[in-house]
Image (cartoon, rainbow, N blue to C red):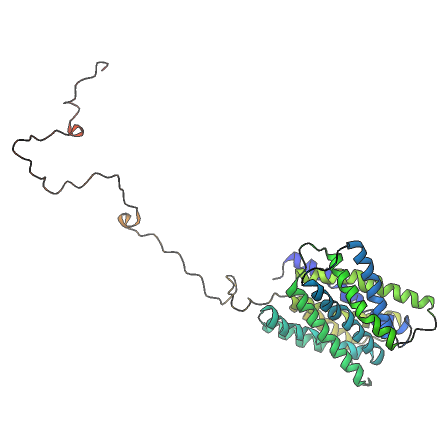
Length: 357
């Protein structure tokens, strides 16, 4: 059963996907149209530079290449593909495709972290995908091949980013804010030349656009990624991946509350199924390969220590101070020698009386 601290950590970590669930609405309603690279770069780079300035610490050693790899997977490539899919696909289709991400994490955690695949996690994966399908799919939805590929690529990037972040951890002398700043900055710098080369600058930014970018930079990037990376440190990678299923739920609720979209009974069933999948996904993975948990059901019990023998002679240690064995006959003395009386053989009657007695 999941412990109390893990429940609180999971609830806090789940706020990040909840915030990301608003990305579909912010992208379509508040940002300039057809600018996925602009949205991704401005979402990551400003906040990353602020955190980097506050931390005043650059990557060292192997983190010179690890930080950019994580920044590309968790921030740069993932967000670009997410925005690209959001521009070219209905939000429901994009969310449905992205829901395969926990399945990928289950496999990667087994390969890279040594976690065992549990039947409950496989069931949770199926429930998550089915719940998202009930929640967002519509019969009239059209598919765009590039949008589908972008959504699949985004799911793969997020899954690999979660797994590698869990495998590599965080340097002991680096704070969480600085660690987040490394990745946001790396992701933004990788995207910057592509944005400047492949996209034209918008004619102008409206007040609505500025509100949308402010939301993406603060809540959608800095605060949410700090919470997200904290959760990856404290929770199993598989448990974190299932929390991402909260994004389509929030996207659907915002569509109902803000855009006046309908919310059917089938969608409510889908939300309940997704919640069940998230709860099942919080169960810890089995013992790692080559390890046997002492408390895991079905594992061989440790051998019990030998019980002490009932015979005191066998269990008690030998007494080396005992008197020697006198059962054997004494060695005969020569004729010219008289036996010497041993003092401890004398009785109290043979001893002279003490003057004080």
